[in-house]
Image (cartoon, rainbow, N blue to C red; front, side):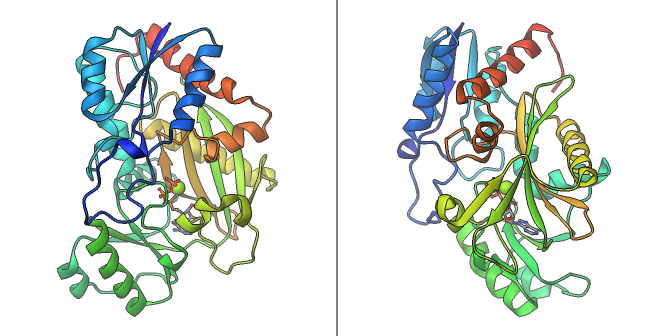
Length: 335
Ligand SMILES: Nc1ncnc2c1ncn2[C@@H]1O[C@H](COP(=O)(O)OP(=O)(O)OP(=O)(O)O)[C@@H](O)[C@H]1O
Ligand SMILES: [Mg+2]
Protein backbone atom coordinates (compact mmCIF):
# COMPACT_ATOMS: atom_id res chain seq x y z
CA UNK A 1 0.00 0.00 0.00
CA UNK A 2 0.99 3.62 -0.43
CA UNK A 3 0.52 4.98 3.07
CA UNK A 4 0.43 8.71 3.87
CA UNK A 5 1.75 9.77 7.27
CA UNK A 6 -0.01 12.74 8.92
CA UNK A 7 1.75 14.24 11.95
CA UNK A 8 2.49 17.51 13.70
CA UNK A 9 6.11 18.07 14.65
CA UNK A 10 6.95 20.26 17.63
CA UNK A 11 9.18 22.42 15.44
CA UNK A 12 6.40 23.01 12.86
CA UNK A 13 3.93 24.52 15.33
CA UNK A 14 3.91 28.29 15.89
CA UNK A 15 3.29 29.47 19.42
CA UNK A 16 1.81 32.71 20.66
CA UNK A 17 3.83 34.69 23.22
CA UNK A 18 1.06 33.98 25.74
CA UNK A 19 1.14 30.18 25.19
CA UNK A 20 1.81 28.10 28.31
CA UNK A 21 5.31 26.65 28.56
CA UNK A 22 4.00 23.12 27.95
CA UNK A 23 2.03 24.10 24.81
CA UNK A 24 4.09 21.83 22.54
CA UNK A 25 3.93 18.81 24.83
CA UNK A 26 1.45 16.79 22.74
CA UNK A 27 3.28 17.23 19.43
CA UNK A 28 5.63 14.65 17.99
CA UNK A 29 9.35 14.51 17.39
CA UNK A 30 10.98 13.64 14.07
CA UNK A 31 12.34 10.45 15.73
CA UNK A 32 8.76 9.18 16.24
CA UNK A 33 7.84 9.93 12.62
CA UNK A 34 10.98 8.12 11.47
CA UNK A 35 10.16 5.09 13.66
CA UNK A 36 6.63 4.82 12.26
CA UNK A 37 7.87 5.29 8.71
CA UNK A 38 10.47 2.53 9.18
CA UNK A 39 7.85 0.24 10.71
CA UNK A 40 5.43 0.80 7.83
CA UNK A 41 8.19 0.21 5.28
CA UNK A 42 9.28 -2.99 7.01
CA UNK A 43 5.71 -4.27 6.51
CA UNK A 44 6.15 -3.69 2.77
CA UNK A 45 4.38 -0.32 2.37
CA UNK A 46 5.68 2.79 0.70
CA UNK A 47 5.35 5.91 2.84
CA UNK A 48 4.55 9.49 1.90
CA UNK A 49 5.17 12.11 4.58
CA UNK A 50 2.21 14.47 4.62
CA UNK A 51 3.02 16.50 7.75
CA UNK A 52 0.35 18.66 9.38
CA UNK A 53 -1.43 22.00 9.10
CA UNK A 54 -1.39 23.83 5.75
CA UNK A 55 1.49 21.62 4.56
CA UNK A 56 -0.75 18.57 5.08
CA UNK A 57 -3.52 20.21 3.03
CA UNK A 58 -1.32 20.83 0.00
CA UNK A 59 0.33 17.41 0.26
CA UNK A 60 -2.92 15.46 0.56
CA UNK A 61 -4.35 17.25 -2.47
CA UNK A 62 -1.24 16.46 -4.52
CA UNK A 63 -0.29 12.92 -3.45
CA UNK A 64 -2.23 9.75 -4.16
CA UNK A 65 -2.34 7.50 -1.10
CA UNK A 66 -4.37 4.40 -0.28
CA UNK A 67 -4.69 5.24 3.41
CA UNK A 68 -3.40 7.80 5.88
CA UNK A 69 -1.74 6.67 9.10
CA UNK A 70 -2.78 9.54 11.33
CA UNK A 71 -0.96 10.78 14.40
CA UNK A 72 -1.66 14.50 13.82
CA UNK A 73 -2.73 16.29 17.00
CA UNK A 74 -4.11 19.29 15.08
CA UNK A 75 -3.40 22.97 15.40
CA UNK A 76 -4.53 25.74 17.71
CA UNK A 77 -6.09 25.75 21.13
CA UNK A 78 -9.34 24.22 19.85
CA UNK A 79 -11.15 21.38 21.59
CA UNK A 80 -11.71 19.75 18.18
CA UNK A 81 -8.11 20.10 17.02
CA UNK A 82 -7.52 16.34 16.83
CA UNK A 83 -10.51 16.12 14.47
CA UNK A 84 -8.96 18.45 11.88
CA UNK A 85 -7.00 15.91 9.82
CA UNK A 86 -9.65 13.13 9.91
CA UNK A 87 -12.30 15.70 8.86
CA UNK A 88 -10.31 16.67 5.76
CA UNK A 89 -9.73 13.00 4.95
CA UNK A 90 -13.46 12.27 5.20
CA UNK A 91 -14.15 15.25 2.94
CA UNK A 92 -11.79 13.76 0.36
CA UNK A 93 -13.04 10.20 1.01
CA UNK A 94 -9.56 8.93 1.88
CA UNK A 95 -9.33 6.06 4.41
CA UNK A 96 -7.33 6.73 7.57
CA UNK A 97 -6.29 4.98 10.77
CA UNK A 98 -7.83 5.73 14.14
CA UNK A 99 -10.99 7.34 15.41
CA UNK A 100 -13.49 9.63 13.71
CA UNK A 101 -13.58 13.43 14.07
CA UNK A 102 -16.60 13.11 16.35
CA UNK A 103 -14.85 10.68 18.71
CA UNK A 104 -11.60 12.66 18.79
CA UNK A 105 -13.44 15.88 19.60
CA UNK A 106 -15.51 14.28 22.37
CA UNK A 107 -12.57 12.53 24.01
CA UNK A 108 -10.42 15.65 24.31
CA UNK A 109 -13.30 17.13 26.32
CA UNK A 110 -12.86 15.36 29.66
CA UNK A 111 -16.16 16.41 31.28
CA UNK A 112 -18.11 15.31 28.20
CA UNK A 113 -16.34 11.95 27.92
CA UNK A 114 -16.85 11.38 31.68
CA UNK A 115 -20.59 11.98 31.26
CA UNK A 116 -20.71 9.35 28.51
CA UNK A 117 -18.66 6.96 30.66
CA UNK A 118 -21.17 7.38 33.52
CA UNK A 119 -24.08 6.78 31.13
CA UNK A 120 -22.57 3.43 30.25
CA UNK A 121 -22.00 2.42 33.87
CA UNK A 122 -18.28 3.21 34.15
CA UNK A 123 -17.40 4.95 37.44
CA UNK A 124 -15.45 8.20 37.23
CA UNK A 125 -14.38 10.58 40.03
CA UNK A 126 -16.86 13.35 40.93
CA UNK A 127 -16.03 16.74 39.54
CA UNK A 128 -17.23 20.26 38.95
CA UNK A 129 -16.33 22.64 36.18
CA UNK A 130 -15.28 26.27 36.58
CA UNK A 131 -15.49 28.25 33.34
CA UNK A 132 -14.07 31.63 34.37
CA UNK A 133 -12.96 33.89 37.22
CA UNK A 134 -16.50 35.16 37.79
CA UNK A 135 -17.76 31.62 38.38
CA UNK A 136 -14.79 30.97 40.64
CA UNK A 137 -15.78 33.85 42.89
CA UNK A 138 -19.31 32.41 43.25
CA UNK A 139 -18.54 28.71 43.63
CA UNK A 140 -19.94 26.88 46.63
CA UNK A 141 -17.31 24.39 47.78
CA UNK A 142 -19.84 22.42 49.83
CA UNK A 143 -20.20 18.91 48.53
CA UNK A 144 -16.79 18.85 46.84
CA UNK A 145 -14.43 16.25 48.23
CA UNK A 146 -10.86 17.20 49.12
CA UNK A 147 -8.09 16.49 48.33
CA UNK A 148 -8.99 17.34 44.75
CA UNK A 149 -7.01 17.71 41.57
CA UNK A 150 -7.31 20.75 39.32
CA UNK A 151 -7.08 19.95 35.60
CA UNK A 152 -7.68 21.84 32.36
CA UNK A 153 -10.92 20.45 30.88
CA UNK A 154 -9.61 19.83 27.36
CA UNK A 155 -5.96 18.87 27.32
CA UNK A 156 -3.71 15.80 27.18
CA UNK A 157 -0.03 14.91 27.70
CA UNK A 158 -0.42 16.21 31.28
CA UNK A 159 -0.54 19.80 30.00
CA UNK A 160 -1.41 21.93 32.99
CA UNK A 161 -1.03 18.99 35.42
CA UNK A 162 1.80 19.30 37.93
CA UNK A 163 2.62 17.73 41.29
CA UNK A 164 1.14 20.94 42.75
CA UNK A 165 -2.23 20.31 41.05
CA UNK A 166 -3.51 18.40 44.08
CA UNK A 167 -5.18 20.81 46.50
CA UNK A 168 -6.24 20.19 50.06
CA UNK A 169 -9.07 22.72 50.42
CA UNK A 170 -11.07 25.60 48.89
CA UNK A 171 -8.48 28.36 49.36
CA UNK A 172 -5.72 26.39 47.66
CA UNK A 173 -8.15 25.28 44.94
CA UNK A 174 -9.21 28.87 44.19
CA UNK A 175 -5.60 30.05 43.96
CA UNK A 176 -4.59 27.22 41.58
CA UNK A 177 -7.70 27.59 39.42
CA UNK A 178 -7.25 31.31 39.05
CA UNK A 179 -3.65 30.87 37.83
CA UNK A 180 -4.57 28.04 35.43
CA UNK A 181 -7.61 29.86 33.98
CA UNK A 182 -5.35 32.73 32.95
CA UNK A 183 -2.66 30.47 31.56
CA UNK A 184 -4.71 27.81 29.70
CA UNK A 185 -7.73 29.93 28.66
CA UNK A 186 -10.28 27.13 29.11
CA UNK A 187 -12.55 25.75 31.87
CA UNK A 188 -10.91 23.99 34.81
CA UNK A 189 -12.07 20.79 36.46
CA UNK A 190 -12.00 20.30 40.19
CA UNK A 191 -11.95 16.51 40.45
CA UNK A 192 -12.07 14.28 43.51
CA UNK A 193 -8.56 12.86 43.99
CA UNK A 194 -8.59 9.05 43.94
CA UNK A 195 -5.66 7.64 45.90
CA UNK A 196 -4.48 4.20 44.89
CA UNK A 197 -3.00 2.46 41.90
CA UNK A 198 -2.58 4.17 38.58
CA UNK A 199 -3.34 1.82 35.69
CA UNK A 200 -3.26 2.57 32.00
CA UNK A 201 -4.94 0.26 29.49
CA UNK A 202 -4.21 -0.28 25.81
CA UNK A 203 -6.99 -1.36 23.46
CA UNK A 204 -6.56 -2.51 19.91
CA UNK A 205 -8.85 -3.59 17.05
CA UNK A 206 -12.56 -3.41 16.30
CA UNK A 207 -15.56 -5.71 16.28
CA UNK A 208 -14.55 -6.70 18.87
CA UNK A 209 -11.80 -4.48 20.28
CA UNK A 210 -9.44 -6.31 22.63
CA UNK A 211 -7.36 -5.32 25.62
CA UNK A 212 -3.71 -5.20 24.57
CA UNK A 213 -2.52 -4.84 28.14
CA UNK A 214 -2.92 -3.20 31.53
CA UNK A 215 0.10 -1.43 33.00
CA UNK A 216 0.56 -0.15 36.53
CA UNK A 217 2.56 3.05 36.93
CA UNK A 218 4.44 3.11 40.21
CA UNK A 219 6.27 6.14 41.66
CA UNK A 220 9.90 5.40 42.54
CA UNK A 221 9.70 7.83 45.46
CA UNK A 222 6.88 7.33 47.94
CA UNK A 223 4.22 10.01 47.55
CA UNK A 224 1.01 10.52 49.51
CA UNK A 225 -0.79 11.83 46.45
CA UNK A 226 1.05 10.44 43.43
CA UNK A 227 0.26 12.32 40.23
CA UNK A 228 1.61 11.15 36.86
CA UNK A 229 2.30 14.78 36.16
CA UNK A 230 4.20 16.67 33.50
CA UNK A 231 7.36 16.77 35.64
CA UNK A 232 7.21 12.99 36.00
CA UNK A 233 6.42 12.24 32.34
CA UNK A 234 9.42 14.38 31.31
CA UNK A 235 11.73 12.38 33.61
CA UNK A 236 9.90 9.05 33.58
CA UNK A 237 13.03 6.88 33.49
CA UNK A 238 14.11 8.16 36.91
CA UNK A 239 10.77 8.84 38.59
CA UNK A 240 8.44 5.92 37.81
CA UNK A 241 8.57 2.23 37.08
CA UNK A 242 6.15 0.40 34.82
CA UNK A 243 4.63 -2.97 35.72
CA UNK A 244 3.06 -4.84 32.85
CA UNK A 245 1.14 -7.04 33.18
CA UNK A 246 -0.11 -5.15 36.26
CA UNK A 247 0.11 -7.37 39.33
CA UNK A 248 -3.35 -6.68 40.75
CA UNK A 249 -6.08 -9.07 41.89
CA UNK A 250 -7.77 -10.93 39.04
CA UNK A 251 -11.13 -9.44 40.00
CA UNK A 252 -9.79 -5.89 39.86
CA UNK A 253 -8.10 -6.52 36.50
CA UNK A 254 -11.36 -7.93 35.14
CA UNK A 255 -13.22 -4.79 36.29
CA UNK A 256 -10.65 -2.55 34.62
CA UNK A 257 -10.80 -4.52 31.36
CA UNK A 258 -14.61 -4.45 31.29
CA UNK A 259 -14.74 -0.71 32.03
CA UNK A 260 -12.13 -0.04 29.33
CA UNK A 261 -13.97 -1.91 26.61
CA UNK A 262 -17.28 -0.31 27.61
CA UNK A 263 -15.80 3.19 27.47
CA UNK A 264 -13.95 2.49 24.19
CA UNK A 265 -17.20 1.38 22.58
CA UNK A 266 -19.46 4.01 24.13
CA UNK A 267 -17.17 6.83 23.05
CA UNK A 268 -17.00 5.48 19.50
CA UNK A 269 -13.26 4.72 19.45
CA UNK A 270 -11.70 2.76 16.60
CA UNK A 271 -8.50 0.80 15.89
CA UNK A 272 -6.65 1.70 19.11
CA UNK A 273 -6.77 3.84 22.24
CA UNK A 274 -5.32 4.17 25.74
CA UNK A 275 -7.38 4.75 28.88
CA UNK A 276 -6.25 5.96 32.31
CA UNK A 277 -7.72 4.73 35.60
CA UNK A 278 -7.09 5.15 39.30
CA UNK A 279 -8.09 2.15 41.39
CA UNK A 280 -9.55 3.10 44.77
CA UNK A 281 -8.40 1.24 47.90
CA UNK A 282 -11.72 -0.70 47.66
CA UNK A 283 -10.68 -2.03 44.25
CA UNK A 284 -13.02 0.14 42.15
CA UNK A 285 -11.41 1.41 38.93
CA UNK A 286 -12.25 5.07 38.30
CA UNK A 287 -12.07 6.23 34.69
CA UNK A 288 -9.98 9.38 34.33
CA UNK A 289 -9.83 9.79 30.57
CA UNK A 290 -9.42 8.10 27.21
CA UNK A 291 -6.86 8.86 24.51
CA UNK A 292 -8.07 7.82 21.05
CA UNK A 293 -4.84 9.25 19.59
CA UNK A 294 -2.28 7.91 22.08
CA UNK A 295 1.38 8.75 21.62
CA UNK A 296 3.46 6.29 19.58
CA UNK A 297 6.92 7.55 20.53
CA UNK A 298 9.33 5.29 22.44
CA UNK A 299 8.54 7.17 25.68
CA UNK A 300 4.76 6.73 25.23
CA UNK A 301 2.82 4.51 27.62
CA UNK A 302 1.23 2.40 24.88
CA UNK A 303 4.61 1.64 23.35
CA UNK A 304 6.22 0.91 26.73
CA UNK A 305 3.29 -1.42 27.46
CA UNK A 306 3.51 -3.26 24.13
CA UNK A 307 7.29 -3.75 24.42
CA UNK A 308 6.91 -5.07 27.99
CA UNK A 309 4.38 -7.59 26.67
CA UNK A 310 6.90 -8.83 24.11
CA UNK A 311 5.62 -6.99 21.03
CA UNK A 312 8.07 -5.41 18.63
CA UNK A 313 7.43 -1.74 17.79
CA UNK A 314 6.78 -2.71 14.15
CA UNK A 315 4.11 -5.17 15.27
CA UNK A 316 2.24 -2.48 17.18
CA UNK A 317 2.19 -0.12 14.20
CA UNK A 318 1.17 -3.00 11.93
CA UNK A 319 -1.67 -3.97 14.28
CA UNK A 320 -3.08 -0.41 14.20
CA UNK A 321 -2.79 -0.28 10.42
CA UNK A 322 -4.37 -3.70 9.98
CA UNK A 323 -7.30 -2.75 12.22
CA UNK A 324 -7.91 0.32 10.05
CA UNK A 325 -7.58 -1.60 6.77
CA UNK A 326 -9.95 -4.35 7.94
CA UNK A 327 -12.49 -1.78 9.12
CA UNK A 328 -12.44 -0.01 5.76
CA UNK A 329 -12.64 -3.30 3.87
CA UNK A 330 -15.77 -4.16 5.81
CA UNK A 331 -17.24 -0.75 4.96
CA UNK A 332 -18.31 -0.06 8.52
CA UNK A 333 -20.30 3.06 7.72
CA UNK A 334 -20.83 4.68 11.11
CA UNK A 335 -18.34 6.24 13.51
N1 LIG B 1 -9.12 12.28 39.86
C1 LIG B 1 -7.82 11.93 39.93
N2 LIG B 1 -7.37 11.27 41.01
C2 LIG B 1 -6.06 10.90 41.12
N3 LIG B 1 -5.14 11.22 40.19
C3 LIG B 1 -5.54 11.89 39.10
C4 LIG B 1 -6.89 12.28 38.90
N4 LIG B 1 -6.98 12.93 37.73
C5 LIG B 1 -5.74 12.94 37.20
N5 LIG B 1 -4.86 12.34 38.02
C6 LIG B 1 -3.42 12.16 37.82
O1 LIG B 1 -2.98 13.06 36.82
C7 LIG B 1 -2.50 12.35 35.69
C8 LIG B 1 -2.84 13.08 34.42
O2 LIG B 1 -4.24 13.20 34.35
P1 LIG B 1 -5.01 12.89 32.99
O3 LIG B 1 -4.75 11.51 32.57
O4 LIG B 1 -6.42 13.31 33.20
O5 LIG B 1 -4.28 13.94 32.06
P2 LIG B 1 -3.84 13.92 30.54
O6 LIG B 1 -3.04 15.14 30.34
O7 LIG B 1 -5.03 13.78 29.67
O8 LIG B 1 -2.95 12.62 30.41
P3 LIG B 1 -2.27 11.94 29.08
O9 LIG B 1 -0.82 12.32 29.15
O10 LIG B 1 -2.49 10.50 29.39
O11 LIG B 1 -2.97 12.45 27.88
C9 LIG B 1 -3.13 10.97 35.80
O12 LIG B 1 -2.39 10.02 35.07
C10 LIG B 1 -3.12 10.76 37.30
O13 LIG B 1 -1.86 10.40 37.78
MG1 LIG C 1 -3.82 10.60 31.00
